[in-house]
Image 1 (cartoon, rainbow, N blue to C red):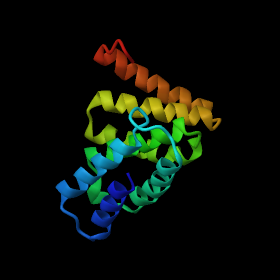
Image 2: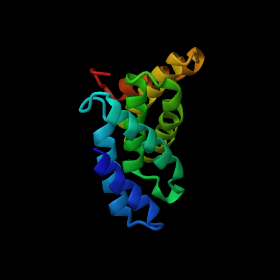
Image 3: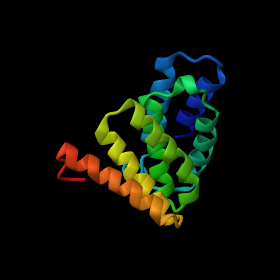
Length: 146
């Protein structure tokens, strides 16, 4: 787990990483932080903290689907581990990226986690707006599981 993070950090520090290398590294980071596959632990908490710093340092040219999914995984990890405040910025950034890049079902997922984080931090009006948009997308997509 830490080895994966260190590889991604090295890619980012390289200055001008190849887009496919960066995308692959961000995909790996998203996978190890995904709460569906990784239980919160001391090691994942360390990875989470370093991942927050890493994605904050990424340049705008790295903004693609891999970064959006990585940000969503970071936000989900923040939610399930009880660090809602730390998850707000990655969640909002994921929503912005998925809004631009698509696909709509991923925007719905990002909006749902952003809404949960907003609710946990006491921003109920913002949470309701995020949930309403997510629900609207789910209805448009005829998504019975949303």
